[in-house]
Image (cartoon, rainbow, N blue to C red; front, side, top):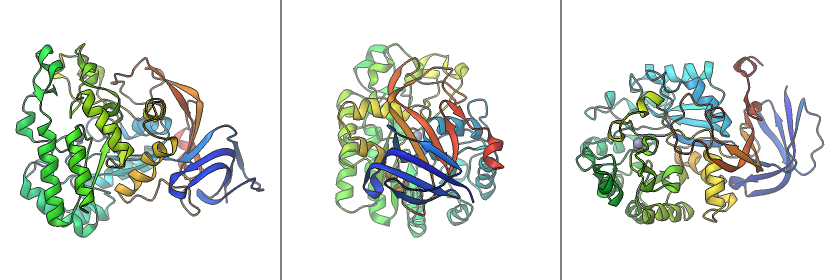
Length: 437
Ligand SMILES: [Zn+2]
């Protein structure tokens, strides 16, 4: 039996309505007791005085690039980046090479994660074979082998009848389709928000309707089938209105928003910085403000980073040629705490909920809570600390982020997965110490 006591921290768990100075007692990787001044002998005691103790953070939308993109990231380096960022669970997108569209692919990711990962990694499987949009995958079989959702992310599910069928089948499995909701013809060769900045820079624009028309379609298909559609990385005010209305009608739609769409506008590309090229593009201030409102009122269920590593070589090209995406796992907590709680957009408790229990609910994951009997996935945060974003501090294999060189308040102190410290004070625990206790 192994035991751990986390003492005197401010335990904040929105799923259990907990906020107070409490101790957490962990036995064999499971939360066994939680209370004031617990008297317990433990193998390991962590003094969390003055620190915030929350359920391990969860990110349901990351790209770990393995197999096929190991120059950008691997499951090993992605898991280190996540652990350093306070994440104990991530769900990885299937747009790898080969695409995760079979039991073999899903099993491969799970096997590599079991060997190489410091944290929980759940694979998301493709909606269509090869993500080619023609033929749906074997949803039941993929679920059996550990897929937690289905997505063709990177691309939308183009064909409306394929989307309808996919929602009909996944409704029976009670699993979501996570759609990168964009109309390809409206995206065209666009690389930036269709607005004044793109016009000034001579860049092709992506109109808001590329997203909103597709979100409207997905909502109608979810209504028709009873399926659950999850809208990835919402970028427009109008999409928020459509989602809010659909939720009111009882349609099974959930949605996520990225830290970069909450923080940045298309002004970030004015220097042609390829670091700020993302899909969907950074939009105007009205959209950004509406996303903040929608996150606050629950229209947008959760924050997801869309962690998308690319090498320096790939990003060091003209704007139009750069692959879209930026990393986020290492420092998203600090960005969100500094900018969302700091600006009064979210309370601390709301922020924790949108990075723990809310994403867990979207995908029916067991984490996001410190309730007794749950796996002891715990993150300890120093709200008085600071997070520096530098090439030296980033644990991801890639450093593609426009936030490089910046500094934000609060700091992830310790990350604990199933009762084992996987990250503490700037250092990831050696894998051998995790897999062979
Ligand atoms: Zn996407």
